[in-house]
Length: 180
Image (tube, rainbow, N blue to C red):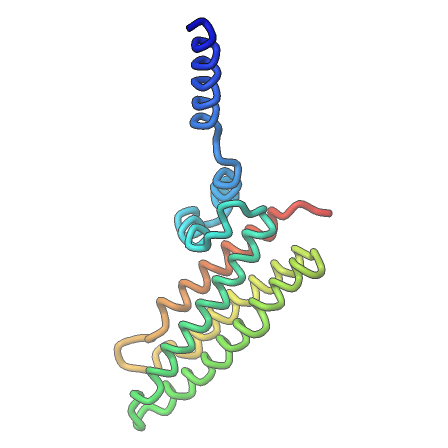
């Protein structure tokens, strides 16, 4: 009976230390997102990837570049669905959408992939930040190309705004990567 008390005390201490001890990985994600322009979206994007639960700041930036690439693909899919529906009497809208296709292909192929490479291979967060900021510029160009060229507004404004947010969050995370 005397032996049970120390064992019970040990189990109680062990249990409470496990319950009370914070999860450092989640702390890193939350601390990182707190330093971005949009905490809520940052958490949403990062938590959608299971590998974020034990990721470093560098790995969180890589996840955001993957989000950028994925968003490019979904935007391209939407644009390709819209293109055939543009009436022939509105060739400007058609041209604007084709310009957006080129911009989003560039974000997927050039910005997202090179951002990942800059972090994984070269350990150059400043270069990766440049690719994130360039994606913001391209999304803004898509919006400008399209503005006012189709009755009812721009059909990819939501996607352009989302890419703008993704780029800002990604650039902010790149700034937080510790120097080697």
